[in-house]
Every structure is written in C-alpha cells, then in structure tokens.
Length: 574
Image (cartoon, rainbow, N blue to C red):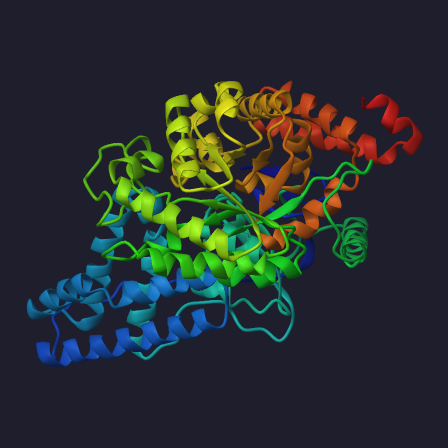
C-alpha cells in the first residue's frame, strides 16, 4: 500500500472492495475508550461482579439483537461475539481479578486482553476473532462506565467513514443511506471488514496506508476499482467520478441475467453461502446456483458433532431453495488447524496451516465424514437440485481417489475436490482423471503458493491472487479441465474481483462463485469482454513480474479493448 502525491492532490492506495466509486466528505470513527485506571476498587468484590454481570448481559443482548436484523456472515459474526461476551472461562478470569481488588472496568480490560492475545497466538480462524474480542471488551467497559460504545459517528449528511478498522457489529449495521464509502488503515481483502463490506455492497478501501492523515470534512473520492482514495479532488476529477457513479447505477439496473461474456459464452455465476438462510438473498441477486456451501456453521462452537438428522434438515432446506436442477456445490467439513473442533482435532500443532486440517482431519475421524455424506445423500434423494460434493485441502491423487470412491459408495452422483494446495494444481491433469470436477479456492492457494498466512497482517502484501505464480497454477487446472472435459470452478474471493474474474475465465474457469453482493459487478464486467479477450488478458497477467504489475497491465489492456471498435476486437484478441 502506498501514498502518491502530485501537483493537484494526494492519492492513497489500498485494497479495493468491488467496483464502486464514492464521492463525499470524511467523518472519522470515534477513538477507542482510554485504558481504565488500575487504582484499587472502592466497592466490594460482590458489587463489582454484579456490575460486570449486568454489563455483559446488556452487551450480549445488544449483539444478539443486531444479529437478528442481518443475515449471512454478519449474523454469524455477531452471534459469535455475543457468545464471547458470555464465555464462562472469561467470566471466571474477570472474577478472579476483581477478587484481587481490581475495578470491574480494569478486570474486564485485563481479562479480555489476555484472551485476545491467546487468540492472536493461535492464528488462523481463532486469530481472526481477536479483533472481535477487542470490540466486545470496549462495549462492556462502555456499559460499565455508562457511556455509549465507541462506534460509527452520527450525521445528518452522507459521509465517507474513515477508521483504523471497523468492528463487525458496526459494519453489519451501517446505515447505507448515510455511509457513502469506507476507508480503513488496517485489513486486507479477506479480513472480516472486507468480507462484510462486500456482502453489503459498500464502496471500500481497506489497508490504506496514510488514511490516518484524513480529517473530518476532507473531501475524497473512494475508487474501489482502482484501489485509491483521492484527497481534495479537482472539479474535473469530481465530475468524472460522479459520471461513473451514474453510469454504473444505470448498468446495474438492467435486470438480472445469466453470466456470459460479450460473445455469448456462458459463465454461470454462483453464490458462496455459509448457511441455508442466505439462499433467498443469493437468488434475488441473480445467483444461478451455489458454488460453495460451507458446512462449518453446523459444527463450529459445538461440543459434539451434529447428528445425521440435524445435518440433513439443513441440507434439504438449502437444496430445496435451489430446486429445478440448479447446481449446488457442498464442501464437506473444513476444520482442524485454524478452525479446531473439540470433537474432531483440538491437539496443539506448531504449524497448524500445514497440519491436520480439511480432508486430512476427516480421514482421521472417518465416522464424522461418513455421517456427513449420509446426510447429504439423503437430502439429495428428497430434493431436485443438482448436488455436487467436494473435499477441502486435497493435495494428492490418493486423497482424490479416497474421497471420490467414498462419495460414490454413498450414491452421490458428482464428486470433486478443491484445489487449494500447489501440488493439486500441478497434478490437476491426473486428479481430473479421477474426480468429476475441481473447484479452486484462491484464498488458500495464494497462501500456500506464496508462503504467507492469509490472516496475518504482517504478510498481507503477499496475499494477492493477482500474483503470476498463483495465476499460473490456476491456468494449469484450467488447461487440465479443458483437456479432460471436466468443469473447473473458482470459489475463492478472487472471483469477486470483477476484472480478475475475466482473467480467471481466460485461464480456463468455467464457473465463478462469490458473495452474492459481488454478482452484479462481476456480471457487468464479463459482458464487456469476449473469450478471446479474456484469454489475452490472462496472458498479459501471466507475463507480469508481480501482483501489482499484473493488475496494472491487465487494467491498461482492458481499457484498450473496451475503447476499440467492436469488429476489431474479435480479430485482435484471438
């Protein structure tokens, strides 16, 4: 991320979410509450503990209320925060600190900080929750002090919100009639803030270095497509941005239609879902099916695995929503490592990202895998959707053969694997001789290709699916799919990047799956290019030396395509 200055204005750069543009004045997020005093309490421990119980109950209730007003990832995160607030181990820690003479505020501050650091040390999925715990701590301390929790500023006029980062509770309930755009100094394209912003179609730039210099009242242009924040724009820049906003709104209001390129090549656009409750919104956004249904929501925060009956009920609900033969790709439980489960594998691992996770964990607990396949097969028999089932974290042909044979043993018709590990991409030609399809998880594929933990801020700059090394691996899978006649889907966050989506099609992707909120922008982007042009853009990206260079080169080449006469384009892009 960088800061650029020219004669006219300053431009900040970060990771853009979506293709939107916003023009408005800045309002900064309120500052965090100061650290509570460490002076001994003047109350009795009994009184302080009662204050904590009351404050925690109020905060948990507020988070649950917020969760009830939203859906999808936002609801899941808010529910998880409410459970964090009422965690019994955390409550015991706070109580012991009160017994040693601390005030309720200080005990909460210290106790939550210890647990936050523990989550950070765990990394992965649990590390991602550390920031959420900070937010809960601030809300409890605010309740104890009788103050409103730090949060989004109130304004009668629309504004661009600038923050260090944004808590899920705030992101989930942003007033979209007032918040024109969002700029944060922290976070990357796969952070909670980015994911929730994408789900709510908020024009956002995350990880914008230098955003701390922005002040209330500054006028800015937030350009998510370019990943830039222009400070004090000129009149020409402002007019151009407003024109783009109008043009994009007109294009997106043209109705929902199947995904296709400019030459009519069909590219089905599918939805990534974390629960069956998101089906209705996905269909309304024009999803032609489901490209990734994450089944973890049934298992996380549980002491025992859900029964076959409990699982079947949820799968039937999902498949029924996409009846009429629409495609639904279900990923079996992807747990272990960064999502440890007490009943599956909660043993300490020094390097969990390379440990017993995904299919490896399920093979070590095959009864859980067999129960899940049983539930899926029974749900499939009761509905008329087109069910596809895939395994996560597959790295060898032997693992592919194990899973596909097991799936067919249970009568599943279409059984495939996720390509998230470089070895699977390099062996894709042989893997697709065994599996019915491949689905590329670009988040993990990028992580493993560039040896950069996708949830670790210090290496966030490496977590970029535009990197030619990642794209070359995707191209290997695309070529293997074309040679074998097998489908190759993309279900990572890369598919939600409208320009990168065109490159992925050029590399051989036959379907794209993403957050429902990203469907409209990707649909619009695909319609601008022919298949020949998509392949040309893919070659341009592969020829670059790095992610930033690939992105800029493709953007320049794409501009040339869309401004050249239509008859010339089909000839020059072949």
